[in-house]
Image (cartoon, rainbow, N blue to C red; front, side, top):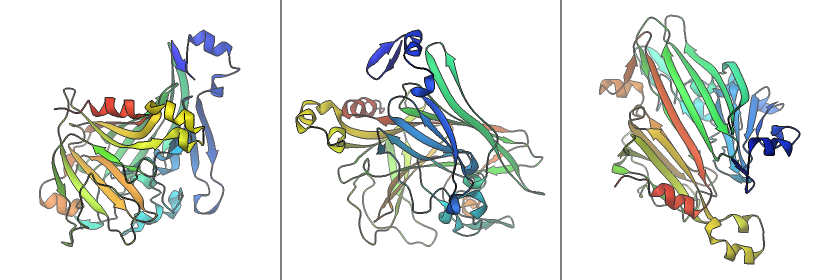
Length: 377
């Protein structure tokens, strides 16, 4: 049975009600036509629940936007979906094309500030989010009563005399789903050992982020990151939030996470006070009669073995109002510093690493409570 729009239907009964299943769920492709976004290909996914997200093949198959029933789930920066040929490789040039979005991937050979390592100049957070994908394939398929929707492609980070890393990514969802799964396979297809630094920069904004927002995570230890300059960010707790503040400085927290019995970690950012009926300007009586529809949140599920580290970026500034939920396989001090402490993973020729992350919407407080209860005791 398929549950859609409050009804449970057989696949055959559902298909009798539409001319094509794309009436309810699927994907649509487009191309940006103006400004610094011109030429960027985009693929919009919709699942029939109100869950919507946009994948950019020309930006490494990252996810530039997501919403649920018209409510934005992610923070969007002022840059827009900058075309890859505008990418500035040196120093902090990455920030000129960092659109935020639901997912910006950092890596594959540097995470953290610009630095020089083994005679290689490395820009902030690496190149991978600005490399267009090849062999891109978006499609749908019925598997029994499940209607699968996906896009996949390959991104190669390589240079003559340098590393040769290839990442195959598949971004998938299905009819009736409020979540998206990102699966990466990174392979060293070169003939020399290559550093491997991966961080999933998941950027949550208003209205999930607000004064009343709560952070749930199985943290056994939380440390505030100190930047290489020795300057510590503004003091404050990782799980306390506020309205946008003038002249606010970013904070970065490093978490040690306890995995559950399946070696999964769930991290949640939720706003229990948000009310979808109020936001939709529906009748106040309906609002008071449907308390189970109060609240909205995001969960991130990842595998602790694949991502042994977790970074939380907290930036409560005006316009830059965001919390980053960031599973990683590495530290964030930059490759040179991480190498000096022996913290950089390396991939031998022919070596492979698999990464999988699920990002989902918690549509009410019942779901928030249910997923929060999954935290290991």
